Image (cartoon, rainbow, N blue to C red):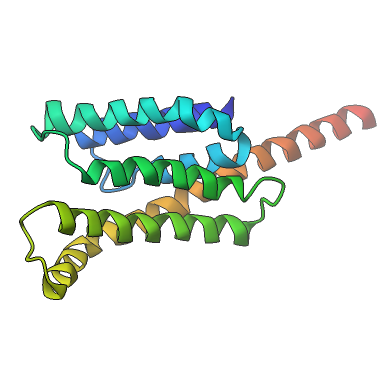
Length: 178
């Protein structure tokens, strides 16, 4: 249930931050929530989650930004699923170093594939190596915030169940001692 709560929070912040309702300063818990979802839910459930993520992106792109559907969105949809799959590698191996590694993998992969898709799809950058480099350089400020956001929210999301278990054990031990 916590996985759905975190993904719901991630999608809500993604939408509210994207449409300007809520200032996020680039800190959106979507990537971290997808990692957590992948680590705690079955792979079959990813495909129920994908239409909700797609609907959120369609809303933002079409209704708020005024963009028609673009082929680079397929890359984002694939990244959503891929991030869940990376999270599934954490099942039964949730350790700080693994969570940090998965979080970095999510941030780096999004930066690489989304910027490549923008370069390949849109006409704002020349279709040569210089244009590709310019696209990646333009994405660096977003990348920095993405890394920080994914690391921060992954630490929070993956720590909360551990903290809850420890508090519960401490309360139980205290009651047994009384």
